[in-house]
Amino acid sequence: MLPIQPPPLGFVLAFLLFSLIFLSNTFRLWFNTEKYYQDLYNSLTRSPMPFKEFFLMRLKNRKRWEVEQKIFSMIGIVAVVGMDVFVVMAYLG
Image 1 (tube, one colour):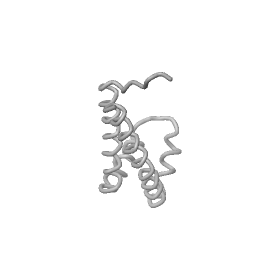
Image 2 (cartoon, rainbow, N blue to C red):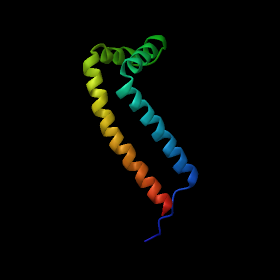
Image 3 (tube, one colour):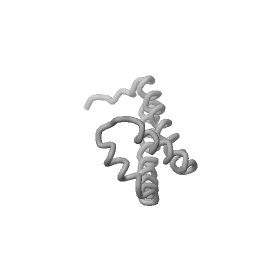
Image 4 (spheres, rainbow, N blue to C red):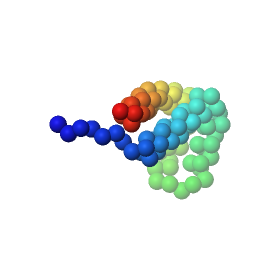
């Protein structure tokens, strides 16, 4: 069996940066929900993008959207923090 080499420092730092971005958005969702919702809604209404109507339809029922997003964010927090621990452990060896 081949020995497993630790990931490069650049990979670890990039991985942690993307985790930080996810956690920052999750913080906004949980603690600045009104502003987060309004920013998302404004972004969807002013920019042309595929499936725009689908996403706007999902945002119309605000309470349902909020519950769904918070459930997915809890699952995401567990996954992201768990993977952060694994990547750092692999780097430290």
